[in-house]
Length: 488
Image (cartoon, rainbow, N blue to C red; front, side):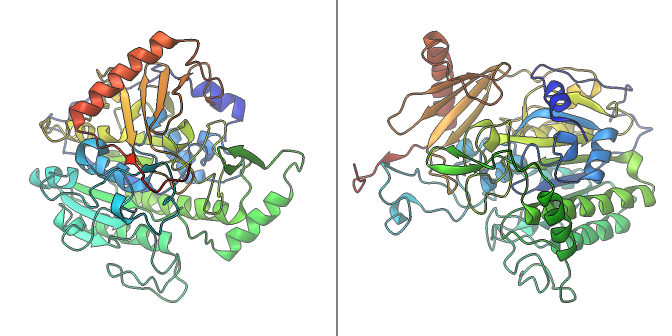
């Protein structure tokens, strides 16, 4: 594990990618690569040992980082789950799709009995399913002869919009719900996953289903998309892991403050939650089962592995499970703690193992990157907002983009307020839709977003605001409206 000092040094915001061997996916001597895409729910930026955690133990993902490239400026397209998941599937920003909140959140005409009923704004309307008209990455790869598999959390629509309707040959556990309906132990009460023996652990079961698929399709090519329900609430861990981390938490320095404030919410400042720690380690063990299977099946050298989280860790609500420090905020917030994610990519024979990349990338980029890696033609009218970062892994070529954008016109369950953000170079601007001034940060100098420089750099604010507004107009972004029932 890295010390906090070494990790922050390695997380420099410049392009710090190194690549290895020259390789062409179009070479007739090389088969199309398999893809294993691992997505974790609500995992924070510092929740892995290789990303700086000294409390959670993640040896298998640390190994993956040593064998691949660790991206320290990787972003989710939204601070909550469904929008980011849609961006991975389509290569489009959630604002362009209209899928800007988690599916199941209240629409503007349904807030009368919701906790946001007296807030100054009514949330923007959003689409609560991934449209069938979209050509997903699974469909694109399937067209090219890939077998496709999905396991775990879907949360991109119910009946008629499930994985099997969106390009996946096999679906193990993907349905409309955002959390495991029966919890993390069998019986699962999941209409798309048969329960195992009583007490069977869900992360292990999803890994087992993924391994079974890989074994049956080892001659490839295949896409195995393992989308853990972990580490989303409910906070439930195996008893052995819970006991392990209770002992570890008891040994922590009691002088370090556990709680701070973010807006009107308490925010966790220390990683010390034993149950959450157990969930993280169990997820890591499940990942290890999949990685070990690639080796045992003799296909690791022709399999590209992606690892990512869909939004920041829960630090301000719902159990206050983790701390994202040095990042500010967490899930549901437009601060870095809500959108910056731990990301690892292993590309055998191409990307130099054990290297670090500080170039900003975002979840829309996976789609064109996977096509690029497979030697398949791009679909620019589909993944219109994504840019391939395969060049970063092969030789340091940066995606040619002016900025990254976020648009979240909703109140987050975790305390975040409606707003939008832009990152251009080292600069990040957050614009709030309630009546409050914008915030400007230099992320190279102020990763923790403590010093708002908006009053010092009014020209930079104007420039970034103009870029943000042009982008919002281009994608047809929807905005919140005044709430007539708001309490002054």
